Amino acid sequence: MTASHEPSLFSIRPVTADDYEQLISLWILSGTHLEIQGRESKSAFLQQLEQFPDLYLVATVGERIVGVVLGTHDGRKGWINRLAVHPDDRRRGIAAALVIACDTAIRVRGIGIVTALVESDNAASAALFETLGYREDVPVRYFRKLGGPST
Image (tube, rainbow, N blue to C red; front, side, top):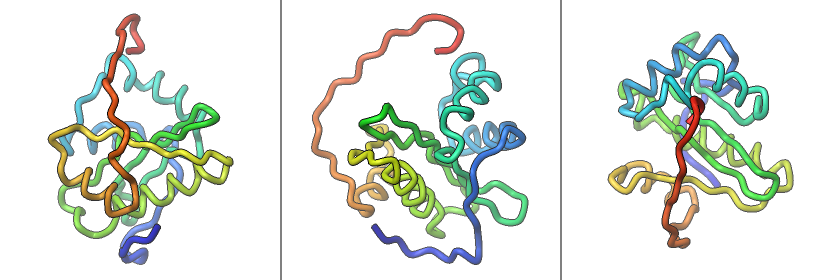
């Protein structure tokens, strides 16, 4: 996978616990629906970060976080989640660089399938994943069961 970006303009590093507030602000600014009292609460986020410390990545310009992606896996399939780039920093290759870095980190573990869920009205994300070689070829219906404080 390749993407054009100018790495001198930003760098990618693992997320730290201290990044939490900036990430919440970035997701809100990017229009991401959050469950701050549930699965995106600070305690839930930190617990997830412990599981996937090298798959939770941010792009930074100086000290400012301009992008984020959260990678996870179940041992056989990897997931790319919560991709967001600050509106002022879009169209600079940040999202592509984050996806490529996350995908690479997942595949290093021997996981051959990497997936992403993209909301049906998010044409920009769909186009990005298609450009990076992902295919929309698995017709699925999404079911979920909510319960408890960490949903």
